[in-house]
Image 1 (cartoon, protein in one colour):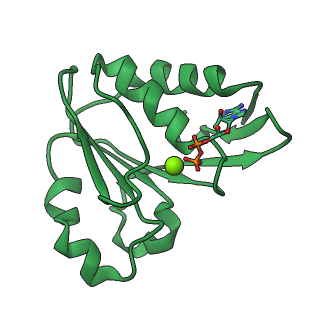
Image 2 (image 1 turned 135 degrees about the vertical axis):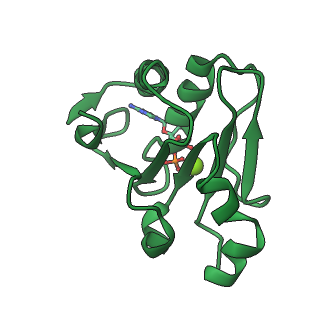
Length: 138
Ligand SMILES: Nc1ncnc2c1ncn2[C@@H]1O[C@H](COP(=O)(O)OP(=O)(O)O)[C@@H](O)[C@H]1O
Ligand SMILES: [Mg+2]
């Protein structure tokens, strides 16, 4: 658990984690709107060496970032209504594949998250501070 003092620090934490990430890893991100989940994924993509723009896959539900050491599959469960919708976007094929899967709002469909996933929790502590729990990665 640590306190990030700004968006750049949260992004930096994602970039550092990228050094340790392996093919097939699944990161399940949990935290309210604005807690820094997408900011963290930006760092992850940068750390893996992708130059693609990272944004919340709110409407498209899945974004892919290539050009780095491993492909990243970025999901956001916020607007996914049910498990059927999740299967329809190919969640299972992707999450059990060889890329890195990162899922925002993973707790909305926790039952769909593979058991080997690492859960990372984000909380808003103040306007610019975020409490980030990376203990599942220790
Ligand atoms: N310490 C911090 N870490 C991450 N984001 C921060 C921090 N402080 C302020 N922010 C701001 O909070 C917002 C976080 O947004 P975002 O990463 O999209 O959150 P989420 O994906 O969890 O909804 C951004 O506008 C960012 O600039
Ligand atoms: Mg987001």
